[in-house]
Image: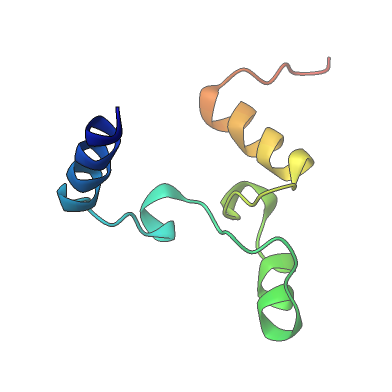
Length: 74
């Protein structure tokens, strides 16, 4: 069992992983922003902002817009 764990850890450590940047996924890891960054985000339309953790409303609006599932209120 111990050999299996060591082999698994060694394999995971040696497997090359391509780095994923926030810009390629449209995800911003910052939950709270301050200063210029906060002003820049607030001045950006909701649909053009990056997805951020715990920002449920904005993330939901963008997801519904991009998937075309928003219902029009007539």
